[in-house]
Length: 361
Image (tube, rainbow, N blue to C red; front, side, top):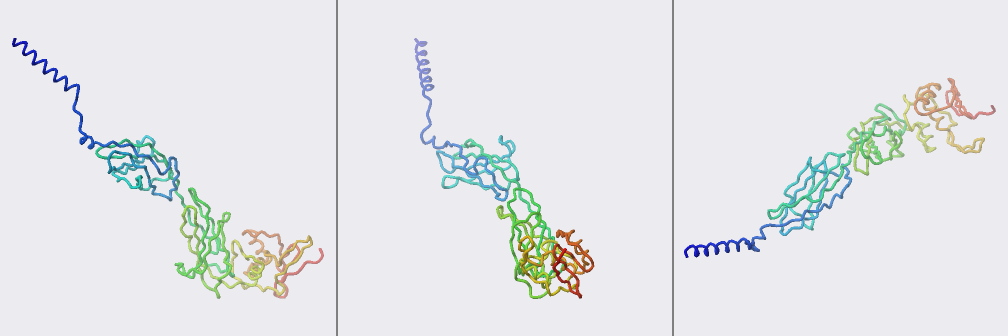
């Protein structure tokens, strides 16, 4: 009898245990609010495979806010140099969720000329979500522009009126856009009193600028420099080394060239100073028609240049040699007192250099 009663009690205990096992306790609705669920944020900007100019650094990353059952999420941004995120280059942690449905973070400047990968995860209510899809962007190569190199006028030169200010074009690297050059002419070496400034498009190999007005009233010392500018990328070089020169009033030959709309020396300026020769009375601007019916303006620029070199102290043959050696090719022939052109002579007569039309053969 006692055994039977014990057996009844044991059976009842087992039944109660089994009932507990089949119906485990469920958390209350109050406890479930302590654990949040969160869905990974989605990348918004930059778009996948975006190209970012180095000049536009530092880059900003933007994601669509994570979907979660609680508010107050924070975000972790990771940037790596490989798609597997084995080499992380930047981590921005604890970024507060932004308003308007998006969260953004500004990166530190990255090494240019490389690909980068980034992804983001959110943490809310003690739950850290998974990283979202990775996205790629590329930082472009850096742009460097060296200062242009002055060619003329160089320090110590004396001009006859406005010279052609010339530089060797800047060397550059990276994705440089079209360059322009800003020329500045001042009365002092600190360039606090700039009297002429102009911007011109880059030339082939060299770039030049010749002022058309605003000339000093008398001979004076001036300073000039040039700067290369890439307006597309908002990058510029340092200014070229400043050069000083003496502005001289225009000589008669320079004035004749200007009347024809020409610059006496558009490239390399010649040596010496003027005052060694006298221009004859028959040098005047005129329109003539050649034997083949083509209209020309006289005197030729070549003739004015030859006289200017003689006026600077060179003999006629040395003048022609200097022109051929310095970018002003000429087929003229010379003697100590005559320079011959195609249909005209420049001859020394009674101490003056005159132009004489050729007659006959």
